[in-house]
Amino acid sequence: MPDKTVQVLQPIPAVVDLFCGVGGLTHGLRFAGLNVIAGIDVDQSCQYSYEHNNQNTKFILADVSSLPFEKIAELYPKGSIRVLVGCAPCQPFSKYTKRYRKGEQNGGREKDVWQRDNKWKLLYSFADIIKHVLPSIISMENVPELKDEQVFTDFCDTLIKLGYSVSNSVIYCPDYGVPQNRRRLVLLASRLGEIKLIEPLYNAENYPTVRERIGELPHVAAGESYHGDIMHSSAKLSDKNIRRIRASVPGGTWRDWDESLRLKCHKEKAGKSYVSVYGRICWDLPSPTITTQFYGYGNGRFGHPEQDRALTLREGALLQSFPPYYEFIDPAREFNRREVGTHIGNAVPVELARAIGISIINHITEVIT
Picture 1: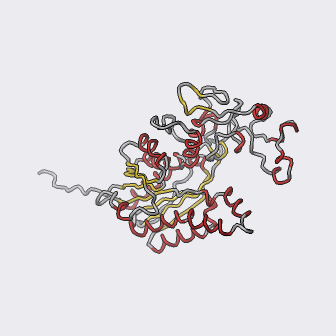
Picture 2 (picture 1 turned 90 degrees about the vertical axis):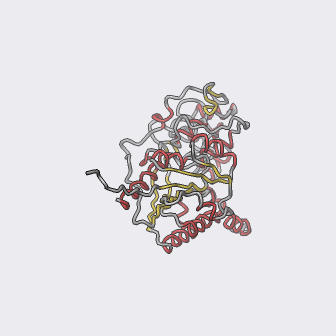
């Protein structure tokens, strides 16, 4: 007799990425096997890189705080498991911004209120979208300092009231394959049951290193580009900064320099604690946190371990765990180093995103089988 067993099709997860930027989070989720159907961002300069590197995923140019909720809900295929992810711009919560906000408390109250209302509202907008779209699963990634802010408490309380099981933790990125000394806050929430991030994939014995990630790239001098990849280009250095980097050692500080090379601020009490600026990174360790200004030698410990220059754009992208083929430069627009550096520094590290994606897939597999 013929087999009359009816196959029951399981619902398929579909992902929308808020504040998608150039696609670090999207790309990692796709690596994990998730179907990312759309990314939404207000910055049109991200569109080429996002779409070019994430084929068949739509880039929507829009401000999430004003985009109608139904427009987001309509993106999901009928019957799919709705997954909503995002990394709201994190500058308002960073250590750098907090330092300046603290300095503005006397006489700077109006500016602080403006910052709170116009920057922090993005996380409240994220919560408002959740209320109306009611995705089954949520992921939110941000800087660890966000945990200490009222906006994060409000965000978690909203999810709990809506019936989500919520987990959050501050993770060390090398634990998940990112060759970068970076800590991030990762929140996962589900209306289907308990959800959590997968256990670390690496440890101190096998953390990915700077050498493993960028050690084979061609040599370039300060102010020059490798002919085969414009992304592998380094900013020009002044003669004095050339002398400074030649006097620097991997992992060292400006205290290794001759007195004549030191900046005035280094000699003042307030500047003596900022020892990482103008330093070289180490070959056999994860790199320092890649910021939006990593391509500038004086913006942190962003000097190449051996070559007398700052990191190139390609090196920063690789340390953010973007694959080597990832394209950031729109051939139809003029090359802008600052813009590309900002895109890279603001991105969710791809390998961390992959770990988040695996966590979501594992959770869905557990609850529907």
